[in-house]
Length: 243
Image 1 (tube, rainbow, N blue to C red):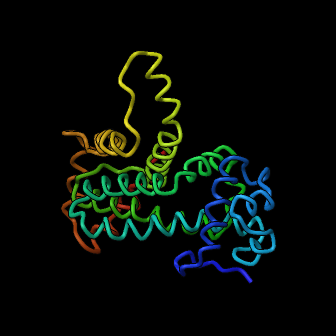
Image 2: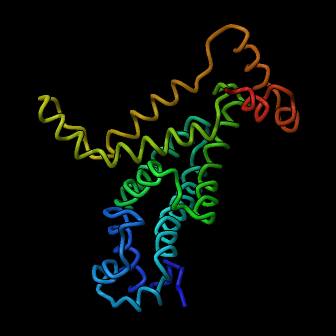
C-alpha cells in the first residue's frame, strides 16, 4: 500500500519524500537507488515501498508534492493581485518561493529539461498544466485590457519557470564568478530575482506605443465578455498568430 497524502502527518512519509528529493537531485532518476533513499530516510527498503511505492512512484510524488504546493500558493496570491501585471509578479514571486521551500526542485527540473522530460509522468505533466493556467489567465486578462501584447502563453510560462529554476540552481556559480570579478555577490533568491525577472518580462509584455499593432490591441482590449473571447484576432486567436 502506498500513502500519497503528504499532509496527513505521516512522519516516515515526509522523511522518505525528503530523502528521495535529495537523491534524485544528486543522481537523477536513472542513477538513484531505493536503497540509498531508504538509508537517508532512516527506514528500511520495505518501508519506502509501503509509505510511497516504487522508484517511479517516488519520483512522481516528489514532483507532485512541489506542484501541489505551488498551485495552492498561486490560488492565494492571485486572489490578492488586482491587475494582470500584479498577477505576473505574483506568479514569479510564488514560483521562486516554492523553489526555495523545495531546494532540490530546481535541479530536478533542470535535469528533466535537459533530458526532454522523459521521466515526467502524465500525472506530473497535468499538474504542470494546472500551474501553467495561472500564467495563461494573467496574459489573457492583460490582453483583454490592452495591458499586454499578444504572446505565446506556454513559452512565457517556460521563460518564467526556466529562469527561476536556472537562476536558483546556479546561485553558487554566480557567487563564485562575482568574487572572481570583484563585483557584489548576488543575493540568494528571491531577494534580487523576483524584481529583476518581473521587470524584464513585463517590459517585453507591454504593447508598443503606436502603430497598427497597437490600434489592433487597443480595440481588442475595449471588447469585454464573450465578444472579447470570440472576436477574431483577439485572445486565443492572437496566440495562434504567434510564430
